[in-house]
Amino acid sequence: MKTPLARIGIVLAVIVLIAVAGLAGRHYWGLITSAPESGAAAIGGPFTLIDESGRTVTEADFRGQPLLVYFGYTYCPDVCPTTLTAIAEALDLLGDKGHDIAVLFITVDPERDRPENLGEYVRVFHPQIVGLTGSPEQVAAAARAYRVYYAKAAQDPDDPEEYAMDHSAYTYLMGRDGKFLTHFPHGVSAKDMAERIAKLL
Ligand code: NI
Image 1 (spheres, rainbow, N blue to C red):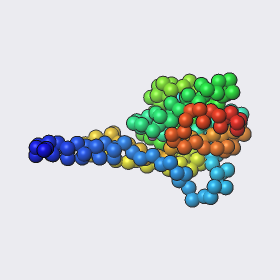
Image 2 (cartoon, protein in one colour; image 1 turned 90 degrees about the horizontal axis):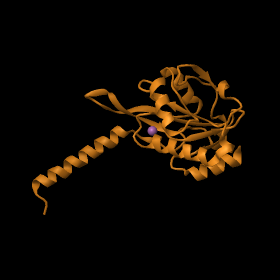
Image 3 (cartoon, rainbow, N blue to C red; image 1 turned 90 degrees about the vertical axis):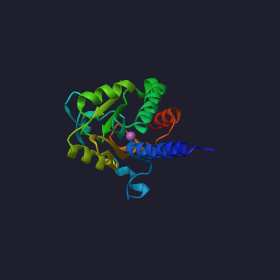
Image 4 (cartoon, rainbow, N blue to C red; image 1 turned 60 degrees about the vertical axis):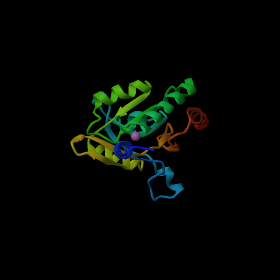
């Protein structure tokens, strides 16, 4: 038999869990687009963003290199770090074959992700990952090009700096010519990713 106090404790724990889940933000696994599958070729395109050193970069700076493009944010508690870890492992598995792949980690949270902390963050995962931010307009334009959905999620009313972002969680593989090749869903294994990249490049 549970005491009334224990019941209250359980109820409180559930409320806290729900609140934490709300603050964690949602990740979307589906392509947020109304375009049919054949429209996948239209994923990608021009962008103007700011790299970790504060330098302005565009898609032209990476032309000739295969790209893995992922939109996320450094405060993401779970999905972004998991995906970046898988990408890093895939790069290690690819070895020489993946040496010129640039991984673009484009923040959907330009308010908090500035060049300084972005660089520090991505470096934890792999030296081939480049952190990109920009003005809210620049980030929005890049997300539009890649058909990425994102939005500010639950916000802590006591601390406006404390919030989560909802965002789609796909990793896009772009060819050396800048054209879309394929995408990987969240949860793909590093081995599967490496094998598909090796086949397509
Ligand atoms: Ni995330």
